[in-house]
Amino acid sequence: MPKHVLHISPGSAPCRAVLLHLHLLRELETPDLADLEVRHLDLQAGEHKGDEYLAIHPRGVVPTLETPWGALTESRAIMRYLAELAQVAAPDADTLYPRSLYQRARVNEWLDWDLGSFYKAIGAAVYPKLFGDLEPDHAQLEAVAKAFSVLERELAEKIYVAGPRLTIADLSLAMGATMLRLVNLEVDDSPNVEGWLIRMQSIPGWNEVNAPFEQWHASIHGEDSPSAGADAAHTNAAKGEASPPRPSA
Ligand SMILES: N[C@@H](CCC(=O)N[C@@H](CS)C(=O)NCC(=O)O)C(=O)O
Image (cartoon, rainbow, N blue to C red; front, side):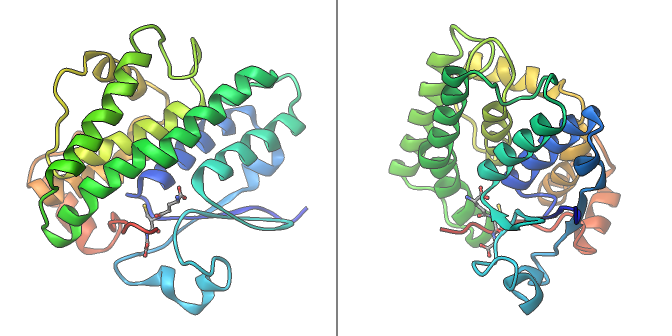
């Protein structure tokens, strides 16, 4: 079977969610995932709007997964596909996408809520500030606070959003939440969400996958990042290695 190719930008939240999922799935050592090639696009240089990439994804956003059957876009659909691919190859393996009908539906529920509410609110507040220095307005801040309050309530009773076990919904939501740090936005009174985010940081691969994001953060805020010094961060950002994502509709 021809190999899979995943096109990403390393700082992007949806791309980081897919990369962390891939990192965890690779522990299963299935041939398709072992062979999967990850290609980095430099968004600052406009590589995602070049003819070569537009031929793969006509809307020119990342991530995109090239499969033997054609291209697949949307990070959450890609995460589901990768889990199912692993489940076909390793039927008894544990993945972050449950096999039971209801549990799987709960994961889909939270992925849908992420796309339609949580990450939507975060993107509306963060991206105009990040790329246009436009402060979020009251309604945008309210929408972020409301989205966090939903998560806060859920996580009062559960360790992870869809229940007692980590799933791809947690990966997607947590990577989205990291974007607030880029513009110094904090949501008060969310101890359950904070605790969950700390738990997420102990997932194997979290630091590795988030290193370019931390470099990007350091290049904006001029701090030492946990994974790299500020000088290295500036150098890498200048080289486009932590190129910032841009929002899309
Ligand atoms: N809903 C999509 C969002 C994809 C998206 O907006 N990607 C951004 C990076 S975070 C991008 O490629 N932006 C480039 C652009 O819009 O020009 C997903 O989850 O995959």
